[in-house]
Amino acid sequence: MHILMKFSIVIPSYQQGRFIENTIQSVLAQNVDKEIFVQDGGSTDDTIRILEKFKNSITWESRPDGGQTCAINAGLKKAEGDIFTYLNSDDVLLPGALEKMQEIFSTNPDVDFAYGMANLIDPNDTYISDYPTCPFDYHELLRTCFICQPACMFRKKAYERLGPFDEKLDYCMDYEYWLRAGKSSRFYYIETKIACSRYHPEAKTIKYPLPVIEEILDMLADYAVPHPDFIWIRSYLNNYFRSKTSDGQNAFVNFSIRYILKLLEIRKKNSLTFKETLWLLSKLFPTYKVICKRRPPPVTF
Image (cartoon, rainbow, N blue to C red; front, top):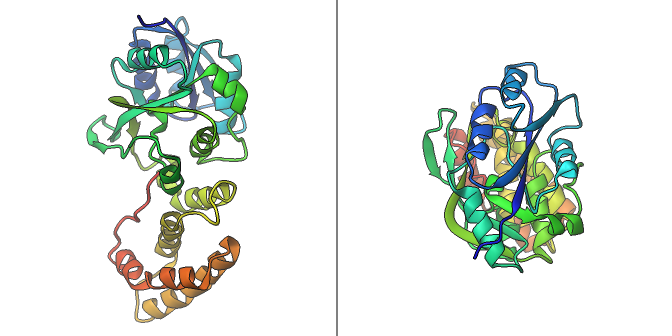
């Protein structure tokens, strides 16, 4: 027998009038007890008009705030449910998502966090690919963020124990939270698709890849021993030089010099050994080829 639970869903929003109605509708369609808080940062597009349409079904406010993470925490402070989550205003829940979460949490009382599979979709709701999720493994989580944020939910008591999301973080606040929680909380992987994460040019993690990875590297300094995994370091180097390298006769020379100087900086900051530094240096030519062919950098969020 499943225990009935109340879900608290926070939707941080800013200038997402194009998508937010679908986001709200995807939550309202869930057949569970729920409350929805939209924390809008003072949008000037169609967002307010859309929020007014749902004024009898949601709680919302629109005012300048400290950004996405502050908005998430502000919404969660109001939450009175048993299960918490936040849903970006361009993402959507799939039909039956909260019913599935209710089943998992009610039959697994020792589970603090549950997350499922997810889709990547484009601005027109067209499927792009599966989000790369996998069963929980803390060591693997340090290497890549395999938890799709809109497909992850957690108990109120876990939030009260762990505290709010880190408001110093603008991009990887969810990744940091999973790492913080993973040290003491049980995660449950659901092999069912729960949500869709929208991939579009204006999404922060797509628009600003270099600042995203810089923030992740700084954040991982508190979790990864002795240093962040080389996957993240290589992604940073690839994105750094993708933005710095230009075509021309001296492109390879300029690239090589910049690569070595940046690599020495990375070595000092992350206390890399000489052997580890040489290994990264050996990736110079493949990295250069990727950049010169203008391929997207191999980044996983």
